[in-house]
Length: 278
Image 1 (cartoon, one colour):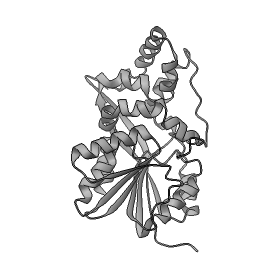
Image 2: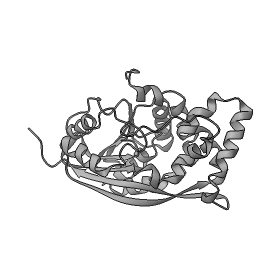
Image 3: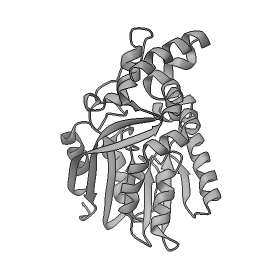
Image 4: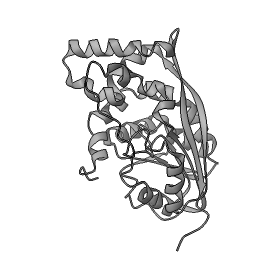
């Protein structure tokens, strides 16, 4: 795995460890997507989970595929893959994990019946090359079932911390068209990527998914995740606490009692590997 890839360097640094530290909160938060993706898996299938992180979706797919299936998670982050392997062993599931960039990894041709992803596909340096590689790894008639974020303006929860903290600290900008959380916000661009990569019958549908997690985890989420989470570790403790307290007020509209509630505005992306291009 080449560290010359900026995404590899990023996800193998503090960002990857932040996801591991917040695994329980993130799994709780994104549990509806785990359920939706697992429901698309059939018994006995071979499934690839792209950008699998700490493995929740891969393990859910493995349970659904059953003992005759095979589920593999791939992610560029060594800390997250290490955690996923531990979780699989503890669960007694036969899921396997590969620490690699799915854009370049030499998967066996036609190895998978289905490719799934929970927010793991927006970070490729060359999305067309990545989806072409995934197409090669999928058997004829195999399918994609993916979720990606729609635009930042439709996801106020995801941008609340950085917007609130902007008067206090310099937060890295989101660069349009670059790899990142909202890189697939433009459905037309996603259609073009799928077509160019050899996928057929692409369907990209807006879905709004209700998500929640315990409010006790909010400070940890603010302090370690997202763009603000990149900045806070560089601050002295008193200043860091000040910024977190300020940012936390921006989340008040999302807190009801002991629970944080928000809507994830996403694309559900589906396509099939029906035609082998020559």
